Image (cartoon, rainbow over all chains, first blue to last red; front, side, top):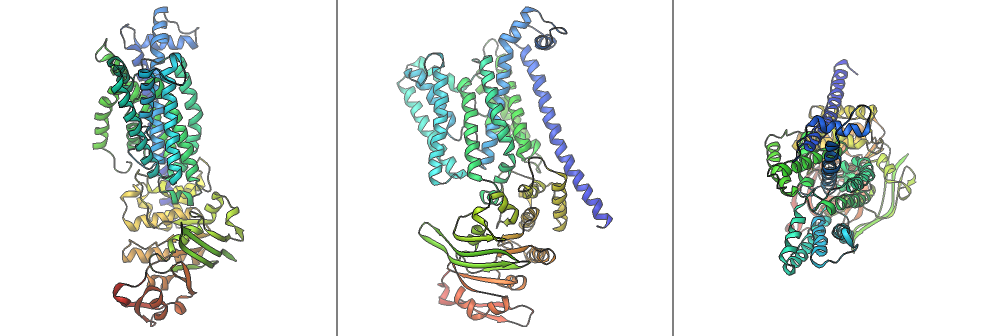
Length: 357
Length: 262
């Protein structure tokens, strides 16, 4: 090999290594952003405590010898605020990863967990519980259980319909849209027959809120994410290949239909676990992956984890603003995600670096 | 050695028979051109060989029945270059080509994989686009990237579906020359569906002429590209000039006033 090309080759390799290194750096920045934002979020509220006190209270739990906090701060942080903050983190993470995976396997930038009729199915399940009091599990989990079961039911129906014609992005999206309209119509019907209090509760549920968070719910979502993420990350090469078309992916050794079905099942599970507790928080699943793609590129090995971090930042930021902007009134976070996310999204969209998005 | 052996291959979409009882053998270091009018089954045949479609009959890759091979094994033996490719969501050229390493690598990208991508990019002269978005490239550049991706698979046989459609004159020749040089230098073979009879004549070692899903004739360009064959397969009256190294086909007019089959 002549020396000149050897130099060129080393340059190109180095350039690519830098290109990949930059992605790790971006993820690190996102991660630090979450830590800082979480601390700030935990300080905001009617009780006045400082960021330092918050971190001390958190660390005191793990290292009681080195840090300590007053009983008052400890209670505020651990009993009232921290689980809500973490709910925003894991919820945002799950919804964003779900969106990124769906956009990848359906090759559609408009796909989100809600494209497959998931949101309207959850909404219908909740309405059924609120208006008719009917559901699969009774007691305090009536609404949650209904939302969860109907979400999965919608996914199975989409899968069944698509299977009949072949699992392609087009069949899945069309089946999803049909399911979405069906459940929306049924929800409208329930709202029509319900009393005004019931209708109000349904509408409020569908706006999404983190007000119902608890440590056990955070734990459950974390476990589900921890179980699903490894598979999704493992298959990120396959999702990359599917972006070039089903035939190309097949020729590269990918079991296209298998990967698509399993990914869809996991995404439905993640989404169902989150929105059954929070109500339908839109926007994060659609926009967090796009924002992330603009800064980190389309390689799903990096896009999936980074989207998760971005989703956590978005939902945590939105919830923090929703809690404080009209305090003591707490706005539904579903409204805030769009209010905050859209300007940021438009900003990135206007100045996007063409090579990466 | 025989790279690909196809026996009794048939394929239908529903009741519509596309390929009917084909027998083809692809040898070492051979460029095999598939020619025939639109709808004669060239693209379908390429997809059947790569098992993107599942035909009846048997295909042997290096003596192994393709039905007994896993997708990953097939991907290491056959590199597929689609007619065109675009991605809704963007990827860089480097990442697109790196995807060709998928059959060989795990989740982590090894040094060797990156080396192979860089080498292939240099071979095809596309290293300057490395970090550009694939969708921003011109048709010719895209085609080269797709060829590069298939080469990164280190396959024994390249399957190309009309690699020169959408390309200007210079890129047509460039892509064909790259493929022929590769076949000459290494012992890989290439099977390509191709529309342009004169490119086929110039760059293919063997031609298979398809008509309505059947093999009409097989042979080298000189014996196959006669005005009689072209007339009955394409329904076009041509003059074949043989003062060049390979036959040169000049179309004169369509028979049946444009109602020719095809």
